Image 1 (cartoon, rainbow, N blue to C red):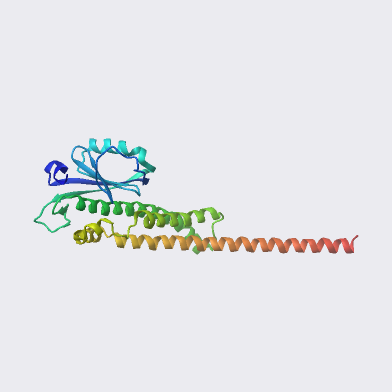
Image 2 (image 1 turned 120 degrees about the vertical axis):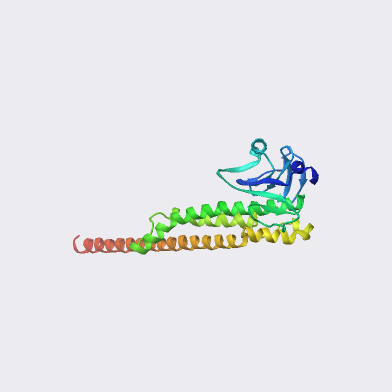
Length: 265
């Protein structure tokens, strides 16, 4: 089947799209399956696609019209689709004279075979997931930075704890999705069956700085969580202190009323 892909073209466009929280593909039968782990199917006239369960679709060698038709067929299988789709484009070139995974204005592969395309799909999928959460976390920083600045300048905390809890929950959710679903730091199962492509995968991983970007996101998530937890603790302490004062005031009032009743019956 490999030699039928792309109609013999030695240069193709690859598009990775992060379309939703996950793909439910158990009943997806619109195309022919080329491989699994990750799932690779035919798409368009001579292209193909890698479908990742954590919501990423990587399209190889499709025209704009073919992409639109393929995506329309996939819509029912996208769970919790995003309003804003993160995407990444690259050009793959089949060139045995260049170093494998040499990246200039394009990426060179020695062959357009299925295992190599699966590896490219895995790398691009993880890269586009990281790009999505880099944008989300940057937005979280924009929201939480004024809270920390207010604490620094005025010594006051937000009045509503649900906002801080939302920041903590968002950080935990992002970390769970990156580690539990996308498995950013894990090697694909494909390498167990094709260990000869280990170097190819490592070069692509290094080029897209997956480990470094993942580590940077983890540090930012940790900072957001610590900041929100600190502000939440201060808010709870402030409320606890306020309740204690209320209790003291009530006790004082009760004592005054008791004395009043005793000396001024």
